[in-house]
Image (cartoon, rainbow, N blue to C red; front, side, top):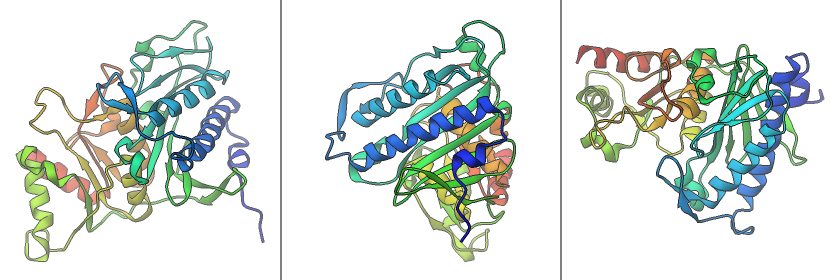
Length: 324
């Protein structure tokens, strides 16, 4: 039997600095996986008793995982600075480092205490390349400029999914805490019969999204001519992982409860890295109309609507939205 390729072996031959950044994140996710698995035993469950910069109540594991990733990346000489969904501003680290790292340390916080899949999302951008401390403005690059992105999902198996210069590759954490290559050239089918959206918010959506979902719900007798199934885990990383594995469409649209806020999900920490993965796997990722990776960020914690997944379904949402 051929010995499986490890993450370290997979990164051999890549830029040494980029390999060290991915390696640091991979090691941090191994530790996070252990802490998630032992949550109740280690008294890591429940609220932390504070809110983050997003004005969201933090869980204990939100704080712990943020510290783990921050420490791992700050210790990596190739990282010039880092930014987290949980922190108000950036942290400058190694002046002259080649890369910037952004992350959502624990996506799907509402699922932490009920043992449903959660995950870590990360994005890697080029640093300015100057021998100075980075500033927040250095991070405001469109998603198409990412040099790598990925996520770890902590579920029945712990899986790390990454994209570097091309393609999407998955690694599974073995019993010895080593990432073993388990899937290459991941591809999303262009067509699907599954959608993921929080249906309880239907009354708050804009008309094009209601129209699109209505077409899905009307089944084979309706305008789409096929029956759909709905899937919703309330953890973006878990929902997107399912789509990468078998297709589907994920929607987190604008809704009228917060009319002045473009969307719920964060462009820099969630939408951009997931959009890069989805596009590299042959899917599409938009804000309903425009390509997410082309959005020029204006602030570190900017929010956007997100529609991503199987290309033909995302295109259908774009068609319905453009016609409105």
